[in-house]
Picture (cartoon, rainbow, N blue to C red):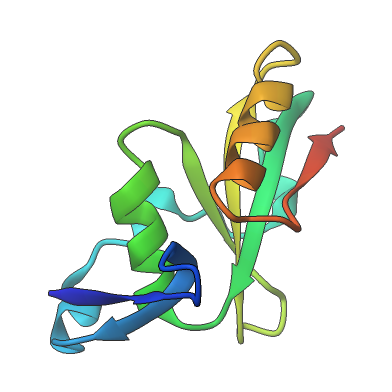
Amino acid sequence: MFNIVRDELNKVDPIGVVLDNPNLIDEYDFEKYTVPSIKQLKSKSYYVQIAVLSDKANIKVILDKYSSKYPITLVPMASGKATQVLVGPLSVDEYGTVLNRFKAYGYKDAFLRKIR
């Protein structure tokens, strides 16, 4: 279904992907992971933002890889041109471990978001 793009060290690039069958993206249920805006996120919770992506194929790769182990939340940007990919809601006891894990997975720019 997908050919993962590999970097020069032959490690899997967490974002790069070549889609063999683009029709599968149209059939994928992104809605069950999506909230309309940041304001709809669970208050007094923590989220780790791992990416902002415009390509649904790349979002699907993340969902397929991590949604069975982590609570993935998608938040469309106001412009509608990209989607924030968040892990959460997380408790105060969980967010440090999750942030460090996703940085180790290759999401070097991942950061914590606290929802008030």
